[in-house]
Image (cartoon, rainbow, N blue to C red; front, side, top):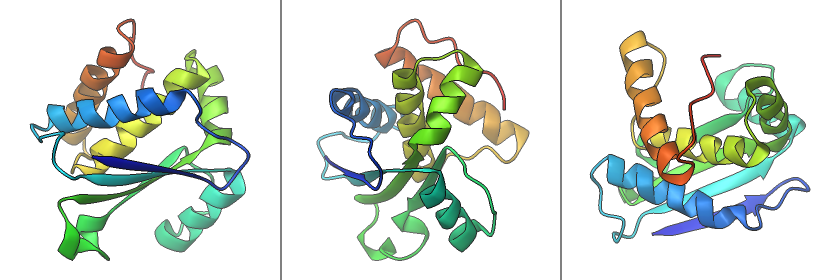
Length: 156
């Protein structure tokens, strides 16, 4: 399994890389996928301007969000799926404000964004109530493996 980290802003994950790698491994296991297989995912850290631009270009939404995932199975690169899972863009500015809003630490919120993003790459969604319940359950199971005290962050 290969996880590449890139930063388009001042943030660098440092010691969080280990927990981010664990988050991806635990999510793959949750989906009953072998972590020894050559899966690849990129995690890109950006700021509000960067994520807003991505939202504008690909979702036609003019606002900053916390995370956006692009699964290769859904478009360009599909011929290499399932091993090339996709890209996860995380806005560190929004993550910081969400940590304060939800009463989590910045570290917990960053890991949660990786979990949320990888679950999207693995086919989870949250647009309908049943999908949202399934995704929240998966997020909680994976997060508790890294942060046993995790109680969730509530609905947005």
